[in-house]
Image (cartoon, rainbow, N blue to C red; front, side, top):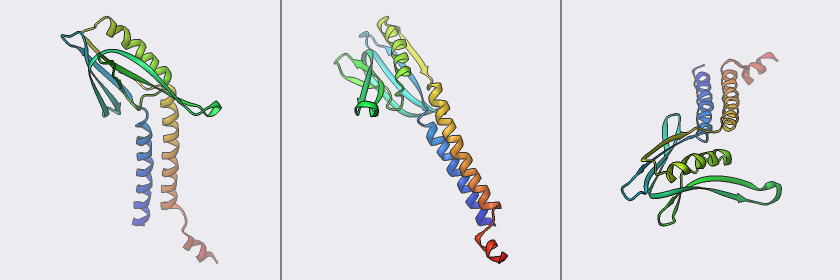
Length: 169
């Protein structure tokens, strides 16, 4: 019986970890930029999941922000992802986040940050939340996977063994 209970707990843990893993793709992006004496920004962007910073990007001498749209494949199989990029005084581009790729959200981010940088705001501190659609999709999939593993765990504890079937004959 202890073996069955431990197996059920293991299944529930796997389901919970799957739910957390899927939420890693559902990150917020916190962007902070400070204007320096040379009228260029020192910026930092953090991909945040459940209040924990997973990826941090630092950029020096930033003077602008742009959206980069990358598409792979052709025809109906063409897949595109968007990234916001800091543009430095030397022309170098630095991607804010590899996780934050929703085209509409990235465009919204660029539209909010670009005027602030053009107006030379002394401090920029903005958090961009994940898209609602992505949140619903990932939480639905994660919830279903969690329920599946919960069901498997409960069946392993309260279900019949193959030995029980042999005893019936």
